[in-house]
Image (cartoon, rainbow, N blue to C red; front, side, top):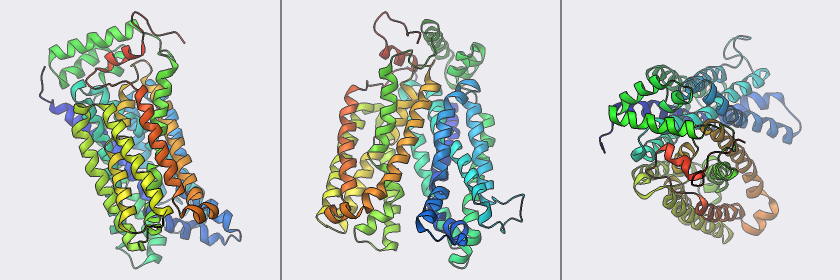
Length: 480
């Protein structure tokens, strides 16, 4: 076996991970601008009903999640009809257009910088477009990497996409901080500064769009569309001629033997596993911690500045342990990492809930959060994307992964929108002192570990060997 990694594979992987970087960048950019959006779009309306004002503020701030669900749903059609590469091009265009449009939602109807709250819905539309780009990239970037990567290092390469997501979040945190220091106080930030935050995303989006013209379509998509010559040419660039011919033969055999492309061709269990991997990734509470981390640390007794600094520590731990996952996913396997990570998260979340319930402040809650982040980063963060990109057979990968990704964004919305209800409810706060929500996430982590017992190990298997996992010996895929 040739252990050398072809430089073309590395290059194509790095370009594809820019989709992950923009995923993180565009979802986290709102953190620096959320108060400015309220000042610019909501407060000038002078709404008497505070609930209505907060509802509008919530819509403006979270509208990208709507687009994420739409992008996830459309991802199956896009990846199947126009391809993995062209689908990423569509995502890059959406990132670019939305970055410019969100920065100047009044253009071309009013002078830039003088639009006011009347163009709030224009801004919402651009953020939905951004979310559609995120939804597409969250599915297509790991899929593209999985379909060009050799089996022996596929987990490692796909996990780099998660690293890129977290890195994108860290980059925009520093970009937002730098922009906030450019002007003279909150007034400048609320009128102009927030625009630069969104506009900054146009630079990585433009780079992503340009670089995508230098990557090929994946050989599996080309074979799926009957372009064997094109697939052979791509495989020749990323491996030896012998490896390419062996892979062509394996892909051809898988497509000819199991030709049904319907969603449940390989059974309902496969689709169920894909959906539940996505759903559990969110039900363990990760985005409650990432989105509301500063509130969690304030509840733990830290002041505002200290809470913001803790967020940077959380980001650094997240990045560090994602690297651990990258280094170990192809050595230890997917299942061990998932089970160990889920149990670590369970202990950390149950302990965090207990610390709050007992009104223990300071370092103890912080350590619980950091242990939880480490457990997630080494397992359910990157490894779920590895599994989703490799468990589905070639014929249904696009549509099945789209369903799983859409389910993930819906679960994300549910967890994100219910955290404040659980955390700020007067009765629960009086009884459990902000600890109740974390106990729920701890229980979900235990269930996630148990769920992994029904998921097969995929380490070291080619994507074509993977489909045999879902068929009984001698069977073919069912027609419906």
